[in-house]
Image (cartoon, rainbow, N blue to C red; front, side):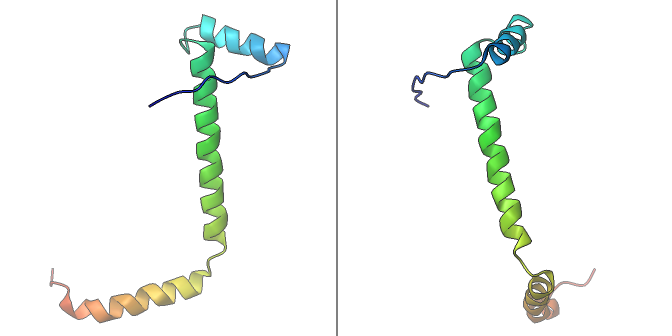
Length: 80
């Protein structure tokens, strides 16, 4: 994976917290902490969008569609 350098401005408090986490050994560097934080935020945003799209679904319609598809296949299911 290739990486690109970017400049990031942080307020003094945030930078102090970043430096503390690096000092405690929780992250190997400032860069790694910021990379992980950005990746985590992007993943949370993706999940939020997915949840929002799922909320648009009509549960009864989805259930009816699923049951319609199942009724055609039930006869071919093995007996247990």
